[in-house]
Length: 104
View (cartoon, helix red, strand yellow):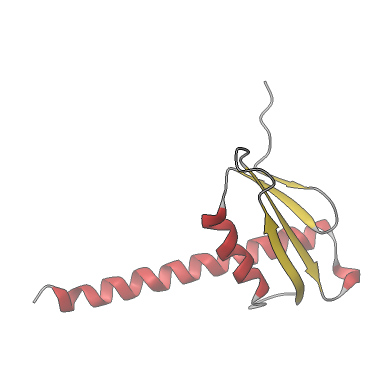
C-alpha cells in the first residue's frame, strides 16, 4: 500500500499540500506574499477544492518568470514556513515575557 506524498508539485506554479487546511494555508499565503526573503512574488493564493478532501493547492507566481521552476516553488514554501515559525516564536516569547505581569 503506497502512501500519497504530503507535498506534490502539480505544475510550474502550483503545489498540492495534503492534510492541511485554512489554519496553515492562510498564514502561509500571507508570509509568502509579503516577500520577506528570496525571489519576489507577484501572486500567491490557495484553494481547497472540496471541503471533504484533505487537499489544498497553493499557487505561487514569481515576478521573474525565468525563475518559475519547481525547486524555486519549494524554496518559497520553505521560506513561508520559516516566516511562520519566526512569527510563532516571537508570539511565544512575548507571551512568556508578559506572564510575569499577570502573576502579581
